[in-house]
Image 1: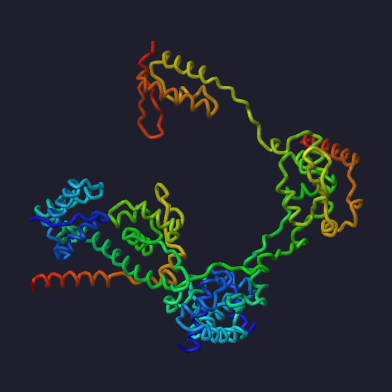
Image 2 (image 1 turned 180 degrees about the vertical axis):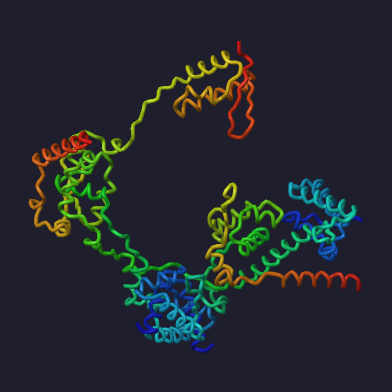
Length: 249
Length: 189
Length: 189
């Protein structure tokens, strides 16, 4: 059966299916799956010929239709309640839900056209109101700030200055200067790989202290793996990584 | 404060602000209870219902806003430029209706119902100010949840989400009847 | 068209336009005579003169415009200018104390003492009316000099700057003693 569809663009596979169902005036609860699948495939083929974009969603639906078609040929499956299961049921449900929202979309569009006739106005604040400055409630602003407090704060500041302590940096914890020589680190790890035939990643990390060192170690391991000098195994997620060296002497 | 005075203040505030104003904000400015403000709003609604009023009042969830009456449209278009409204394509309308009825909803759920990736549509609706992020779902990947905005209510003449056109089994039954009728028609030919 | 209908149309048009509208333009949109429009305007003026109206109408030469009644300004201020709560934060207090004791002082000097950029704090204090510009320093760049205001004296209950609590070496010695004491206490544990 040839299908005269002027290739129109559908929102998606469900939209196309709805179109085919409407066009054939089919009862959505009793879809002749063979006919619909044929027509659907015809459309997809036509789309491909016309160089239209056939997105993966259309192909997934094609697969679903063919799957349903196959199941229809097989003896019917029976569910827990002993009822026969219709392989089309899930698709029908999907189509109905989609159709419902499509219908609601039209309903909303009507409402929108109606609401478009109501107009609003721009904000228009009179100059006097715009220029008005809210007076400051000084007693509220000061709160418990007294002259004594003001004096204390200033004394504190002077003291800080005397101590020549940077008020910001003094609040930081201890910062250790890190000196990592990347090249040296890389050489060290490469040497380790040559010296050990099999070792764990954790074992290698034991000698590394800072975050930067660990990151460098990890990167070197990745690099070595890429070069094929080592092999890596990890049995479980977050488990230890076992490294086997091919270059070990 | 008399009802007339109260109503005049609410009117002045709404007129000046143009935009919707929360009833609680009105109450605060007027140093009174929201309950009282609602009385003034009722008074205004009655006043605006008269023939000599070109203005109306719409309620949006817990806020109110002034607007022109629909009957005035024909005169307004003659003198003023129609406010620019976002043109919603079918795919945007579809996505919007799903979000409106199923909110809060994730992108993935919208996609499941439509059968196609809907990220672009959702993003456009957010750009148009009709849809907003509501937070994140407490599930793997913590996907964003979307819902409609106040602008949605205004644009679609809906007072609150409860006011959305009813949806449910009735429609489904109607579809069924329609489908059956269509088949009969076919047979009749 | 009844007077009421005419008035409602004029109202709707003026409401939407916001700006003033020529009477002749109104007449054109309503397909009537200016003379008629003037009658509707009279009707509106009377309607707006009632107690239950927050809106008024102003006539400008041959045009008309809607506006909020002046009596409503106090409420508009409350809603349009939600006051930002003025609070003296620690950083403002610090800056204020430096300006109080070291005035006249430039922004740069304040920054040197506090060790952080204090432009924002100085500006806030000026906004609050506790600090004012005193002039410019005769130095490269001619930086502004700041000092406290009369409001500062009033707020802190000081009659003059000489009345500010004394500060000097005595205090510094006290701190030293205090600090030593603290260390001893620590050692005692």
